[in-house]
Image (cartoon, rainbow over all chains, first blue to last red; front, side):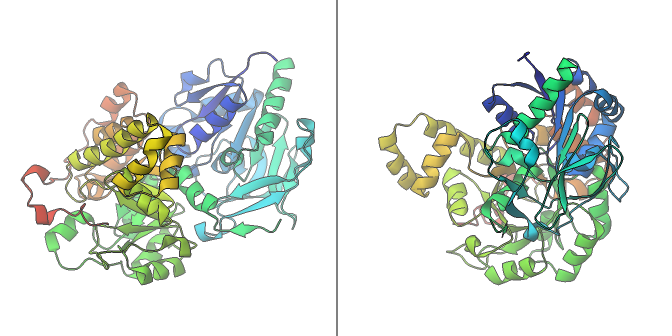
Length: 200
Length: 295
């Protein structure tokens, strides 16, 4: 594997958990807080956190347009707040990257008291792992992906069919937090996407 | 598997999502909006900020649920609210309101001078204050999913926040060099559950997220606490008791993100207007200090 370099947007939220997951996989990772930190980055993770805070800081430090430009051609994965930030529609006025043709509903399950853990089927993970067991997903004041349009496709749903993961070409969105569990299959799936992008 | 609601992982997980952020005390829905627009990751809804509790005296209790509900309706970010130490019925009420986090807080007048709330019994997560590692681990043992160092609330003087953060971090550093046979005596010495002492040693940090609180009034204060190793900051009276809350709030948020970048810190610290007046802790009578509440 070419030595890849993954950026983790480190404005606020669970960026150190993502850095730790990447480090366990032996992948080089760097924090992205200012536009010039995106140089030499092959793929970017936008962590969980508060999407309003992350969006505001991205605007204030001149990152919004840079991140949009990066995501037009290079792989980006957003978890929870990151998924909201990637979407083109969060049904609310707040800064978004508008890169993915998905509509999200913030806090779709309610307040913190409704946060939950559950096992979900995530068939695409079979591309990076022989482990066929469901993925144990943690949802915290989580959003839902209400609909996917155009080139975006559904990767995982809850048993009742509601969408919790989607992909559009080199872009990946998960409503839950793989960075909070030891299971590294979604991280490996994203690295697989980065690898494919580097080959292309 | 069936889905499980309000597990410890989801409680602790919400605090993980708040890391690198600023939680601001607000007393009205308008202030909550200002805080959200300034980039706060959460707000603490209360009737009086700590500086006013100090000024006005009397018994400080849980805020009126009506005010908490109005604040919850005014913002999309998490809303926290305070219960008195040991007042498990105030906590039950806050859970019924569905606040996102309950702060069992020394800023309010304690309801029990020996026992804290049994926080395992609640679906809503709790944050609790500490002055040292033993106190932090006792609270986690009772079920707290997030810790904050206490500092001295409502003073605008950061000295106690620094003392408490250094105490916690220093004890963790000491613990990491300790051989197994010394851990039980250390647990006894600091009055902490043995299993949590072992876990803290193995992790090299507290098992839950740890914010700083109590006396943070400037972007520089906030960045210093971050450099000392906390995961984020609470700013109580420091923002809405200052001359320009929107601007100061915005600056503190930026300072917490860019805490390692002195050039950005210099830029955001410019022209913030008056900081809260504050009170000097070194000349404060012992009985006025509130950090000693908690057992």
